[in-house]
Structure formats: C-alpha cells, structure tokens
Length: 502
Image (cartoon, rainbow, N blue to C red; front, side, top):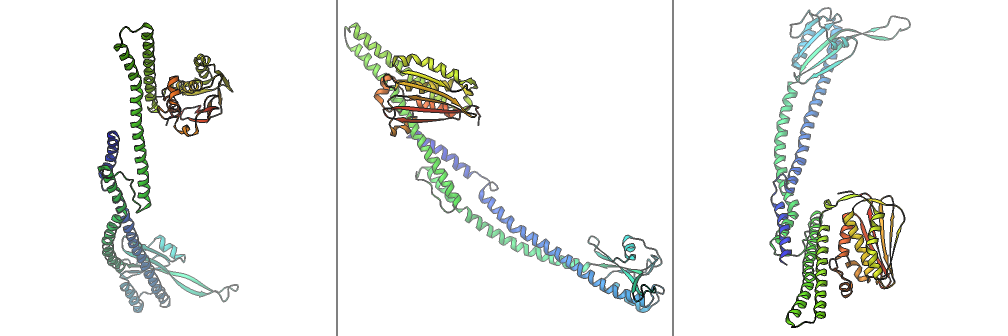
C-alpha cells in the first residue's frame, strides 16, 4: 500500500502546487476581477465621449442656425439700404457691429466683384478676397465650416435681390440675383467652456462610478471564486491525507465538472495502483513457484542416500522443466515491459502481411501436428501494411499458439487474412474448449487464467493475451473475441494499413 499512497501524494502535491503558485494575472480570480473592472469602466468612457461629442455637435448646429437666421435678416437690410453701393448707413453699420459683438466674431461684406466693402475689424476693406467658399457662395450655395482646432465657425451667405422677370415668357415670375456675400466668423469659446465644465463633471462622476465598480468587482470576484477556493481546500484535504472521499463542490457547474473529472482521475489512479500491486504480487508468486519446486526437488535429492539413477534423472528432468518454465515467464515479462513503452519504440516498416502469417503458420505447424490439430490458412487478398514486424509477429503467434494448445483432439485452427481500403483483419478461429462468458472481460489481464490447472499443464504463463493486446493497441488497432464454452473461440485483430503516430 506504500506505493499507492506515494503515487497519490506525488500527483496531488503537484496539482496543489500548480493551483497555489500562480500569479494574480494568471489566476482565475484576477482575470475575473480585471474583466469585470474593464466591462464596468469601458461603458463610462464611451458614455462620456458620446455625451461630449453629442453636446458639441448639437451646440455647433444650434449656433450655426442662429447665425444663419441673423445673417439672412441682415442681408435683406443690406439690399434695402443699397449698402453694397454706399457703406455710410449708420443703421447697417450698427447692425453689423452688433452682430460681430453678439457672436464674438468678424463680419465681412463682399460685393459681386469679390471686393470687401465692409470689415468689422476694419483691416481688410477695399481688398479682394478669393476662396473656394466665396466662389461657391456667389453661385448661390450657402457654406458652413466648423474649425474645432482654432475654435470658430465660418459661414458664407449670399446677399440676394429678388426681381420681376421682364421677358414675356417669364412674365410674373421672380428671380433672385446674388449681389454680394456675407462672410461671418463666430467664436465658439462658450461651447468649449461648457464642454470643459461637462468634461470635469464627467471625470468626477466617472471617478465615483469607478470606485463603486472597483468595490463591487472585488466582492463579485470573491463570490465567483468562492467555489474554487472550496475546491482547493478539498484538494488540500486529500493531499494531506485527511480524507480519501471523492471531491464534491456543487456550488457551480464548472467546479462540479472539475470535481467529477478529478474523481475519475483519482479512481483511475487507484485502479492502476491496485493493478500494479496485484501485478507485483502475481509476478512474485509466478516466479517463486518454479523456484520452490526446484528447491523441493533438490532438497529431496540431497537428503536421500544412494538415490537410484532413474529417480535422479526423473528429478533432474523435473528441475529442467521448472527452469524452462521460469525462463518462459521471464521472457514474457520482458516482452510485456517492451509493450508497455510508448509507440515511439515501434520500428515501423512496410511488411508483406501474407508472408508474415505464412511464416507464423510454418513455425507453429509442428506443435499442431503433435496435438493432432489441423492448421488452415486462408488469404483473401494480398496485404501490405506499415507495422512493427517483430511485435505483430509476437501478437499473432500468441493467438495461433493459444488456439492450438487450448484445442480438442482432432480439432482445427483456421487463420483468415482480409483487408479493405483502411484496415487489414486477421481472424483466428478454433474448435477448442472455449472461454466462459464471465471470463471474457478478464482474459487480457496479466497472469489471468481461465483454467489454472490446464494452463500450467500446457506451460502457459497468463501473459500471452496481455502481450497481444498491447501490441495491437500500439498499432492503433483493435482486438475482439467471441467464444462459446465447449465449442470454440474466435479472435479478430484489426489494424490500420498505414500507421499514423500521434
């Protein structure tokens, strides 16, 4: 039992250290905390940005609309007072100054010849202005531009005069002629100031919300991680040896699944450990039995005086048989150890399976003849596969040899080889003693014997089928058995034609 507890302690200790020795950013609790914190703060940043952008856009639109309305009214006054021809009107000049002061900006009045007739700043009068916006405005288009970087709104509105059409065809129709342009630059300092106030308030609100989110996230992450803490505590209990009961943490579905998976692994480990203990016990027993027999025979010869030659020869023959039996057990154990290694130990090559089976049949035919068993081989098609020739030969030899040894007098053994586009199949059928139904699930276990007395009589070690199954599984194949007690047994080995390493 020391070996089992040692293996369990080592595995549990490694799992315990892996769960314990993790950094905050790699821990599930840390990740949950960060995710909740990010998910909580990102909407705040988005809302802050959206509110500020929406306010700015709406404020600019409202201010542009107000300026446009005021400028249109003033443009009509310019036409009525013929201001483009005479800029001495005090009323118009007062209205222009008032408009400039109202929007903290600058107003330019430009005639149809692109000459500036009025500048509320008084620095560009009499100059000619040429720009894309002015040219487009002369064609009757109203332009508006918001310069966020420099902090102003610029608009161009045509100064139009409505006239009656003189042509007979157009009698009674009214046409509008562009007589000039009003170019207005308005400051948006008040919008920026309001945005700064909103931004400061938003930052303050975000800070408060951020602190609340931080606190809530801590409690939520602790709540979500609580089942995993229970899981770690349960693992601690198992690792320390305080309990061997299955772990059960049903607080959430994930921990329940983890617990179930760990319990399956724990059960598998216990089963393997029990199997290992049983195997060691069986090996000790099987190896000790021939040695005990040889010691008894040798002691009998030693204690007797004047042993007759016939008795001496009989005892020595028995000792030689026990030595041969011991040698067979050791060889089978070595073969089984090789089979237990990883598939990387396979020596894969292209092998003619037909020739391989024929060779096995030739080697075993003398044994069949001595037991008066008919050996039949049927090949349905040529088969070439990528296999380890040595291991596959050992596996198939064990099946055919068992079929011969556990057969009836005047019985038969039939070996059939077939293949499809993916696998080849070797079937071994016999007319032997068969296997009881309750023993079929145990026949691949090491040292398992259906009939121990008969197995020892014919020299079986109980390792042949275990070796065969290991070799088949190493080739990514499968082995199936069907048997009727007293009538015979059928083994079917199915192996891929092309070996694919995993």
